[in-house]
Length: 243
Image (cartoon, rainbow, N blue to C red; front, side, top):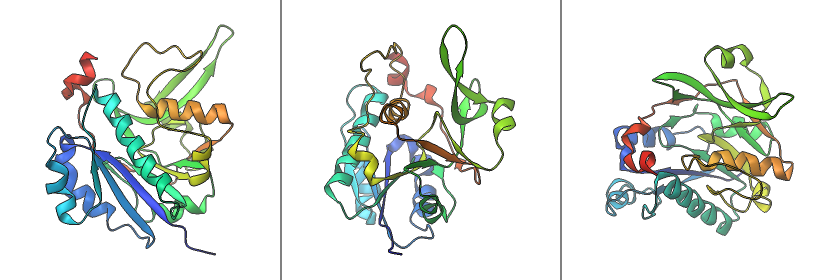
């Protein structure tokens, strides 16, 4: 069996500087030989990516932060996606957020599952510092269908260590086969067709899973591990709140 080549992509900014060295050391020491790392930095300081990544031998592209945080994170993801498209040597894209710490064997383990999209779970800061698994289900009633985040006991009651097909979860530690991008053209943060989302704080992962569903591409969560997530408070991002 041939060795699969993997590109790890990680949008970041100087707002994640508090864990940058620790995270970078971890990501560069994963137990897999055939992977590269691409950082996409959207810091306001255009020198940050040179000083903190390029000068240290890490491949990094700077994206000017225009719009609100949703806009420029999505733009950063699309810059990384274009790089991936332009380099067909890579069989998989592995998205790892710059404050998420996957297991050292995450790459080979996720590849071995042979799924088009598969995520390792992690906790997010939800509702006044109450952690919740980043995992959504679809609930149907006789009136309508609603998505629901599995917070607290809801998540633990369904968490059994198995591999599950999911309605949606985060993309903070997600392995994606190259063929998926033949159907999903880009990351997006804008509504399409009959979507009705008034809140501009919806990140691109929500739309990514919607687009997978439209294309009939299943997504999975493997519950064998829970990644460490050293999150920061989104309330500190004034552009996120005000837009």
